[in-house]
Every structure is written in C-alpha cells, then in structure tokens.
Image (tube, rainbow, N blue to C red; front, side, top):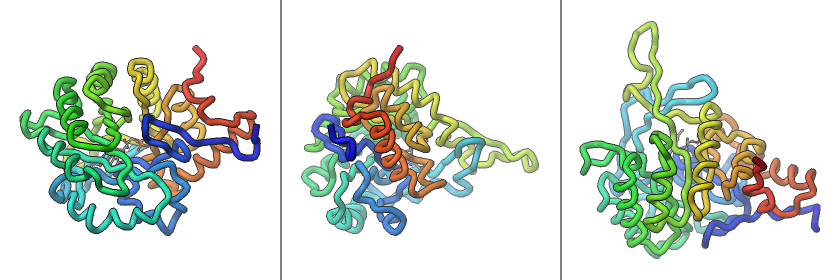
Amino acid sequence: MNLQQPDLSVRLGSLELKNPVMAASGTFGYGREFESLIDLNLLGAIVVKGLSLEPIPGNPPPRIVETPCGMLNAIGLANIGLREFIEEKLPWFQGLDTQVIVNIYGHSIDEYGELANALKGVEGVSALEVNISCPNVELGGMVFGKDPEVSARVTEKVVSNTDKPVIVKLSPNVTDICVLARAVEDSGADIISLINTLTGMAIDIETRFPKLANISGGLSGPAIKPVALYQVWQVVNTVKIPVIGIGGITDYRDALEFLIAGARAIQVGTANFVNPHATLDIIEGLRGYCLEKGIDNINDIIGSLKT
Ligand SMILES: Cc1cc2nc3c(=O)[nH]c(=O)nc-3n(C[C@H](O)[C@H](O)[C@H](O)COP(=O)(O)O)c2cc1C
C-alpha cells in the first residue's frame, strides 16, 4: 500500500478520470475563464456550458438571485452555439490534460441528434452530457426530462448519433426519479448524472415583483444537497450504469457523502462562484481523507454506505 499517494482515479464505463472531481456545466464557463485562477490540469473533468445548435442570448436580467444557502438562476441557457464553440473554444482545450465533456441541449429531439452528430469524431471531446431539463418545442414547452418516454427518445437519438460516451443529466423536478433513470438506461445511456437545479422563485416584498424577470428559476447550492444526495442514492440503487452526483457540493466532506452513497464521480457547481479553488480543495481533501484513513484507492469508498 502506497500511503503517500492514494489512487484517486475512477472509471465510468469507457470514461477514465484522474480523480472523481468535475466542474459542473454552467458554472465554469468554457473552462478558460478559470485558467488564471486554478491549474485546470488537476481536474478530473470540465463540463462546459450547455450548447445549442444556434447561439442563444438567454433570459432578460435580473437572472440570478441569492437565496439562503443557495442561489436561483434563470440564465435561459445562454450560449455561443455549437459552431463557435468548435472553432473558437475547443482548440484551446487540446493543450489541457483533463477530460472535456460537452453539455448539449436541443429544442426538439432532432436537434439533440444534430448536436451529437456534429460532435462525432471531434477530437478533444471526451463525452457528451445531455441536458434534458429544457422546454421541448415539439411538446408545447413541456420539459423533456419530466416525461420518461420523451427522455428515452432523446437518449436513443443521441446514442445513435455519437461515437462518445453519453451521460444523461436528470432533472429532480419529477415525482419518481427512478422511473426516468430506468428509461434512459434502457435507451442506451452510458452514464447518468444528477441533479440539475430544483425549480423555485423569490419575491421582492417592497416592489411585489418576482426577483427574477423570468419569475421562476433553478435553485442550486448547499440548500439542495440533501435532496440531491437522496436522489443519487435512489438512482444508484436502481440502475447498473455509473452515476455522477451533483448538487450543493461545497467541500470534500460533501463529495465524500455522494461517493459513499455510490456516485462514481461528482460535479461542483455553485461552489465555484464562492470559491474558484473549490474543485481543487475538494481533490486535496479527498486525498487527505484517504491518507488519514489508510485507504489507498478511492474506489474502496464508492458505494460503501452502511445501512
Ligand atoms: C448559473 C448556472 C448555470 C447552469 N447552466 C447549466 C447548463 O447550461 N446545463 C446544465 O446541464 N446544467 C446547468 N446548471 C446546473 C448545474 O450544472 C448543476 O447541475 C446544479 O447547479 C446543481 O449543482 P450545484 O448545487 O453544485 O450548483 C447551471 C447552474 C447554474 C447555477
């Protein structure tokens, strides 16, 4: 046993990470924004801001509100679009020694397929993360990820149009997340990540207007951690494919809870806004915990929950 250097590497199907810590989509820009703040090569993976086929300006401001132990956002999936990402952003990633995961979303099932197809064979993209928490124009604005049948069709579409591992990211805003997890696993997803934000709102009592121009937004940060942890644990016990835990992870202790519950890796979102070093602090914390407990491989912790 080499106690000086515990092995933090994890494997999620064909996706290999040097450690289980990733930066979550929408909270880390296109990676480069953090270049002067942290050594990006130390990360397990970077998940880039959600990309659509065409650029999207997003919702009008105000689109972010601080809440007790968290934040509400209604960014409206603002992004530069796939073409600009491939031409302007992706080449820079080639010099990095970390996995790059591209988060995609479409307004129709075909659009998901087109996005996956456009990224087929593109070097430097390690996996696709499919965000199904957005309104489906084909179904009159209903969110894809609330309907198991539609989630399954999106998954099938992406899987049949890509040569990369497919991570499907689940929404917590459903009655039984296990039904959705089963549907995407049965449709060929390689990995499941969860949770995306929980829908909420806030009101300014002086003006009596909603604090977000969009009225509602997605709640993230420490406030959602217990909900996220429970849903991750439920999904881990439902599917056979690897699971990535997301939601309110701020320090290594939070990360450990998700790993013990059975998540094979974790993503850090809102914490990046508070502490740009959060991801690296978590990696160091995991290393320290393993050393302290005499654990030489992080995989020994994963799924070790006692009940
Ligand atoms: C400002 C902001 C933008 C986000 N944008 C995306 C996105 O484009 N695609 C996506 O799948 N998730 C997006 N998310 C959700 C996060 O990736 C993550 O699932 C969620 O915030 C819960 O994790 P956290 O509590 O660590 O932030 C966004 C979250 C925030 C706060």
